[in-house]
Length: 373
Image 1: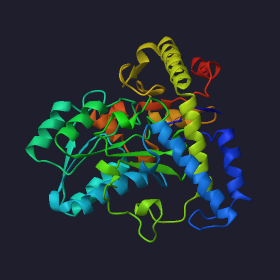
Image 2: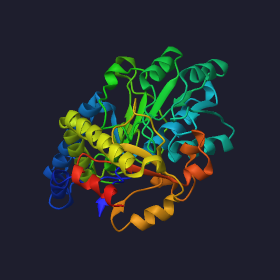
Image 3: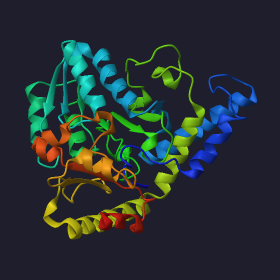
């Protein structure tokens, strides 16, 4: 089977697995313990992983907080800001095309009396910058949460402008960067308006069950206050209690190192594969396919393709012995895509759409399978 569902998850790289294995066997120490070698070795392994993540994201080591993944990080930021800064207001701004872990967290807060503005998007899934500024001026929020790159159609929001606007209006800005980490260049030191960022390890050929919440320090290295999602210990500067999963953190650190070292090469490979696949699909199916994305300002390697008059679930099941595809986000499987709905697509169009998401490990030869359908 050829795997084209890399936005859902990726294969763990062999060198990542090799680096993890010692921490599942002989190096089993708890990094929160002290003095003896097993604990010190675990502490050093976590320290190295934190440094590798900071290098990938362009931030300081102590701004990296390890979590179980982007879903936890998103919950942690949105609920944590809401609880910590509730005296400053009860308004949050997000968009209609966020990941379910953002949308459902905001809906939960609405049930508790919070006001949430869900910004609309254009035909490719991007928010309008003026809409954001107008919403901030109308009712100043305590938090803006906008996805960096969409997981279904690949469209990139204008994060630099969004971050600048939020900083100008002194509003916390959080971005779910799960799909862009390792696929575009990120330097958080050059984007001071981003206060919080979320990512997951399993999207960059690392292990599942581990991710990062970037929390920017305030002036004079003062930690940003945030109510923890998990209480019960002082791990991760008090932001996230619980014994650290050292093996997963080590794997994430190695995956981040690989993504950073190969970033330019991977981007070039993904763009090449996407262009070739687009040509193959158009040559093979002609007017029987339509692309829901544009070719500008998008994550390389994500294609949202409508197969006209073909039910997407029937098509995916038929192709399952040969190709791994999805209808969209794995976290909202079985539901019509809220992303495509927000983009103005009809239910018929949505039910004819599949997502093809590539990895640098995919080959040109693998793409040829679409010529044989």
